[in-house]
Length: 291
Length: 276
Image 1 (tube, each protein chain N blue to C red):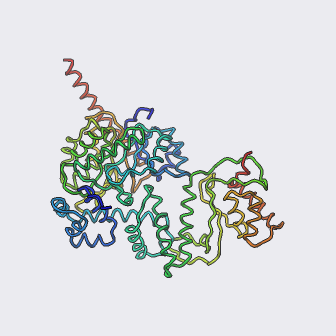
Image 2: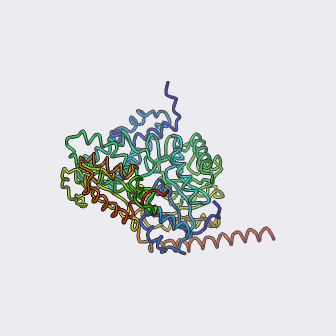
Image 3: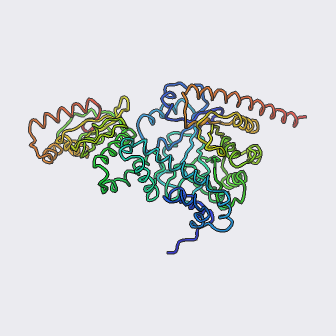
């Protein structure tokens, strides 16, 4: 909370390569690490000790899975208390979780869709505000990959996201891979989708690879390299909003860290080129104003 | 008190939850989607919209959620599940998921939640060998010790004193089994049965390399250690432990326990007497 947010390409910290990170193999190669607190709460041992060392060497961003922002059951007091303790020990400029339901009567341990309705937007926004108050830090929410819309959609997804952002007065963690996957699965233009997103609310990006479930459905598995189309979407956004933290997620078929760092370096080139275009655009605008 | 009227959002969220959890939902969705949704309270435009979207993606969610949780349980209880067999495990899982499900945000808690539910059912099921439950507990003991909070506490520097308790590393756990499950091969393909042999293990996390270590205790040592871990003084633990084991508190027991205390101190499991 005390340090400014990192910018550039970061990597989601995973158990598969935490030993290598702890050994210094990513030092200087990533702009930041993103940590999912659920992997560390109520836990001791090797990975917790490793994180204690790693947090001194990398800026951290916190990103959760279990807040149930889109749910209808009350927020989990015990979880929030422990999460708050974790974040106090591992300060991050904001905390993010997903625009999804993951608990209804029981935990599903998955990111499930919420109805795109006014009722839903009001409820979710209230829960985001409550989460921010409980954690005493700004909240972002992330757009998810959804495979099935729920109920009667009173608005489309970008309108729903904009409504929640406005009502919660919070930031957006924009996952461009999720936008791409949804565009393929639901048959819309991902750039038209991006055009409708209030980009001034974007504080962070997620980027990842996906896989096919069947011939008609892509799944956001984080199990493959980032496709060129998704890289281009990341660049499109960075060109318009400027420097932000961009997080590479990899959760399945995880390659050696060296391969992931090579992908980080490749993404960094794309990111920097997009930033150059952003800077050029800003200079042009400034020049035009002075003319 | 009458149930409050559900909102349109809650109705459709509950229908999704039912599609994920109910045992018969897979067939119901495949057979008559409209009937499934209607049975869960959807009507009018919401029902029409959901039916129009078809059953495939709903079934996909059901498969994704259930597969993931089944995989996590199997990952933590590999030898137990191998002995249970795929078909019966799938039945166990489906019943657990419908009746109880997970209530922890933490994914690694799911196997514990599953076993808590399965234990009384397996105990009552003559088809489940008694040692399988001990094996399941042993597999989860490893997970518990590996992830235990605490551990690596510094030695107190205070020597053992009969009138004081002993402090232990925060990861130390004493487990008792009716079967020697700790001697079963780690190979998941080996389905051999454990011998019926009361066993006591002191488990702890190695402070140097985080590995979970086990020390097999004799019955008398386990009685003493049980009481020491509970916080009793050394003399009380020795006296009550000997009585519980049905043996005399003699030189042989004292020599054996002295040797064990020295070994555990060397390993960093016993930290010493509490500092004054």
